[in-house]
Image 1: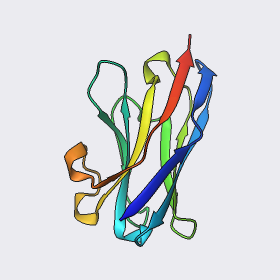
Image 2: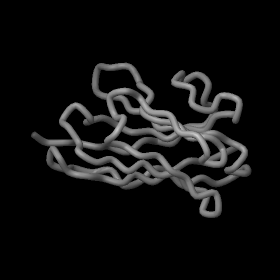
Image 3: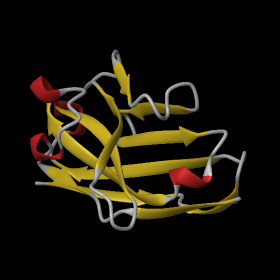
Length: 125
């Protein structure tokens, strides 16, 4: 089992920045690829970004490329999501998730086996 706990969400004005963190406990964190997803009201959960087990490869949805940055610190069992130039359409609940390494970068929620509880990000216009 891997337990994931997100933090860092909140309310920010358009153009602002937030940094989300996802702290993992349980099984060896570095055994997993990690991803961030988001879900807005009335919409499906969508892939935002992913990172390989050692941080060597990163993957981004087109909508966030150039604005968001994913990183991880395996010594702290934590994955981060730096969000810059936020837009109102980025408003959603953000979830971190863990997947087997062979699914690194997958944009399919079903490939991820562990999920956090989510953190709300609201971007005002």
